[in-house]
Image (cartoon, rainbow, N blue to C red; front, side, top):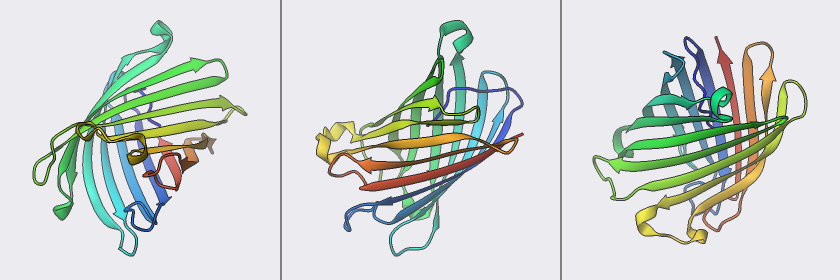
Length: 217
């Protein structure tokens, strides 16, 4: 789950891994995805992130999928407003025949409540260039975690991918998933996040697993 926070001169390297299983005819069946994030905070309000994505479909090899430049803006801080709020704008350049490219805008909230933390993301995207389709894609994500120790949090999260809003597809044709998440710190400068989600709509992946690890310096 994305965070709105930005810190001047902070650098972060993150590796993300995801795996899903679905119906045999689905493109999400036995699908493995990777992402490498390189992030730098230029000010306390703006950071830039470069993302290199890989994708392995069933019976195929792992291939480069996209190169994304993401601009992150920290707009409201909890010290003043009681919650953190930020926005992101990104451009994804697809590799070779994996067109079309994509632009996206996202809004990110983080609400601290004593031992609890609530996060919400709203992400909207639009295809551009070769083979692009009209319409706006929309996705909502929610996460609630609670501290179980000084360095670890346990909680639940749900992802809701509504697809292209122009198509106005029903719930069963959208991708809705739900499950537990565990995240925290390991060693001195490393963070991790891992989770499992089960599909709660017909066209969602039946099972999704993720593991992230990052280092700040």
